[in-house]
Length: 408
Image (tube, rainbow, N blue to C red):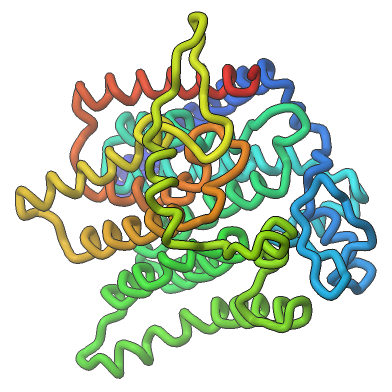
């Protein structure tokens, strides 16, 4: 018995060492990129609506006292509101008691990124060897748009958009990690995590049915009614989180599902809607447009996204793994359900009016990376030589591309 315990502790220590080494590599690359983009992680980004909202909360208000023309603020009945879901405000609220309005939002955006990468490693390690888990985590972190969101450039690394996406990345990845736990409390934490992720990026709600299905598989009883009853305690806290969002939205915009985006001036003056199916073809052509070579240097589209197959390559990698499993008749119901959910998520982004403003690659689509990682890892197949070569090339491309993009 003691020999088995000793072996387990040794394996755990080795896994922890691999995780720390992986995160250290990601951090070093992030710092390298930051040194070329002017990012200062110990500075405060002024493009941070969440800290302003936190300060307003401390005064008992939901409105902002000024216009802040450089921010995306909703204007409703003559008042200014933060137009983004409120979950990322909570960390800034806690930090504001120490730092006031100068919260270290850039640093916390980086920490959310590293935390999400740690959760990604744990998901990968559940299905793959330690070496392959480390390689896949590095690819997730450095082989796409996530690196740019975490590091960004100049005074924007802790901006409202990047905080929301990085905290969502962390919370969504934790939700996928925890839902398969043997411990009921950890599975409950998974649903709380996705509920909080929705408070960062509302479309993450698309993954709730999948996570509930995974929970159902764990607690399944003899009848459907018994199974639902067994699931109800897990859903109590997430339901309260959702109710809090609805109450906050009602207090501001008199609608439980309105976070404020519809009241941005770009929509109220144009009469456009946030989501419109007529935009799908335009957005699809944009995200597949390749970068161009001019005067010996790559140039990128600044708005609307570009080259999803290069800047969010977990899409082709994740879909390829599921397709391969399906052809071999190894895929299971969770694989098909999650793949369908990712397809719906992908299509939902294509209906967005702007498809994202100033961005490297396809920033919006990075929200699907935790699900694609989960799909890839669930195949339980080691990373093959041609895949590792492609991953290495894409990591180099995206590190280079992120730096060049911010030099434009």
